[in-house]
Length: 131
Image 1 (tube, rainbow, N blue to C red):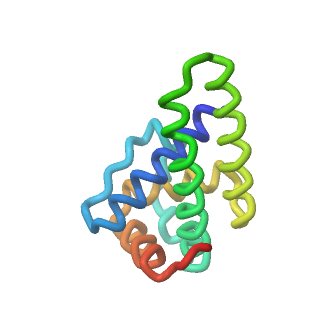
Image 2 (cartoon, helix red, strand yellow):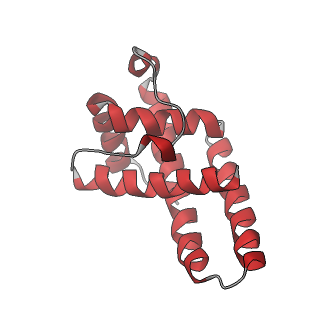
C-alpha cells in the first residue's frame, strides 16, 4: 500500500510537470490505480478538479521532499521509515483536500487518458496558489 501511494506521488509529480509544460499527458496506468470507465470525465466537476490541483501541488511537495532521500537511503530500515512517513503525509494531504487516495488516483488516471480533464486540471494548476 505504501509503495502504491509513493507511486501516486511520483505520478502526480510527473503529471504536474507535464501539465505545466503543456505537453501531451502520458501517465502509466499501472502507477496510478484503476482506469476510468467510459463517461467518468463528465462526473468530474471543476470544483473537484480545483481541489485536485491543490492536492496535486501539495503531493508534489511531499514527493519532492522524500524521493531524493529515498534514493539515498542505505538500509531497508531507513527506506521503510521514509516510506512510512511519506505515505502518511501523502495520505493526509489528499484527505485534507476531501479525497480518498482511491479517488485521487482515479482522477490522476483520468488526466492521463482524457485530454479534456488534463486541460481543465492544467488550467486550475496555473490559477492555484498553494502555501
